[in-house]
Structures are given as C-alpha cells and as structure tokens.
Image (tube, rainbow, N blue to C red; front, side, top):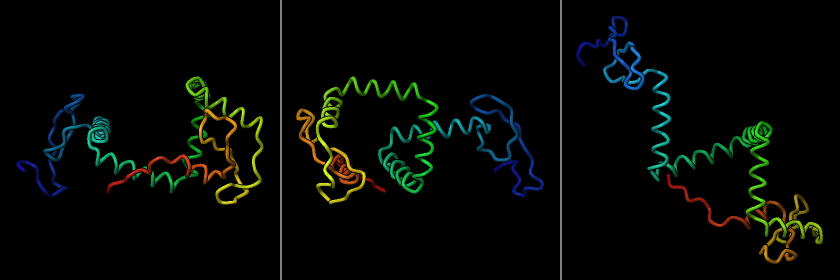
Length: 165
C-alpha cells in the first residue's frame, strides 16, 4: 500500500485529481479516482449501463422494484397523483395520442357505456364491488361482460413476469 498508513489518527493524505472533472482532492486510499459529485454521476451511469446490458441484473432490478412498489402502494399512488398534477399538459398530450392511436377501442368503450348497463354482479366471481365492462374483441363493441376490477385485470394478464433471482 505504499505511503498510506493503516492508523487513521496518523493518516497522511495525498493530493490527486478527479479523473472526470480534474478537481484537486485529498485522498487517503490509492484507489479513489472520483470526487464525491463525479462518483454519484459515475455510479448512476454504471447502474444504467448494467441495467441495459445485463439481462440477469435487469430481472433482479425489476423484481426488487416490483416488491418495493407492492410494499409502498400508498407512497406510489401519492407520487403518481402529485406527478399528474404537476404535468397536466403532458398527461393530456399522452391521452390525446392514445385516443388517436386506439380509435376502435375508444369507440367500442363509448358505445358499450351508452347502450349496455352493467350487470349487478361479476360474471366470474359474483362480486358486486368495482364492476367494469370487459370487451373480448373491440371490433364487436356491444359484446361485453361485467367483471369486477380484480377479475378484469386477470383477463388482461397475457404473460406473468418471469423473475430469476
């Protein structure tokens, strides 16, 4: 380790430059290459690189994020609501784009809501709460079933996320 004493009280510092911003900094270990600000940027860049280039790492990150999201639902909902309030133009722009790209879906939903009443209970589980219309095919706008939100979400799951840890 050269001129780097192990006793912290008598530790000597060397002066070196950050490899990114060239700022002069005191170091007490030979392998410090970045100042604190550049270290944060470097760590974010490395995390993004690993996420984009290492599929196993990406699956682990997704699994960890899903777990955190499930454990912090109220926090996530609060953040989403706050983001929507602060980005109204972006939300409206996105909604308008989605409606332009999905005219058949929008028309089918509008026709069903105008012409078909909801059944009193879910056709799968019998629940009477949070009832919704479910189109099996949007080219048949009046062919709908009444489902609770839980059963409706299950109908839309195409392939569960495979998590490898």
